[in-house]
Image (cartoon, rainbow, N blue to C red; front, top):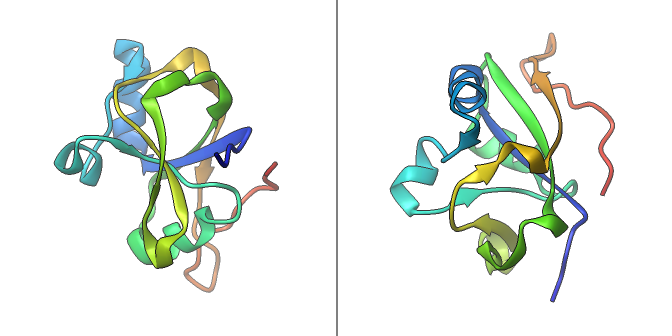
Length: 117
C-alpha cells in the first residue's frame, strides 16, 4: 500500500479557523458531500489547487502526518486512477504539522511553499 509521510489539505481559512476553535477538522465543501476528507500528496496538491480552487484566495494549506492517522486513512483511486488519501473521520489537530496561507501569485496561480513528499 502506498503511504505518504506528509499529506496536504487545502481549505478556506474560515473553515480552518473553526477547526482550531473546536479542536478538530471535520471537513468542508466536497468533504462533507462525499463523507470523507480529501487530501493530496506533495505530487498531487498543486494540480488539486488548479482543478478545484483556481483563482480562489483566502485558502490555507495544511500539512498532516498521514502515517499517524491509522485505519481511517484510505488510499483510493481518483483522477486518472491515481491513489489519493481520504480520511474517513475527523482530523485531530494533533496530526497537523503546519499550516500556511495559500496565496495567489501575480499570474493568478497559487504560490506553494516547499513541500516534503
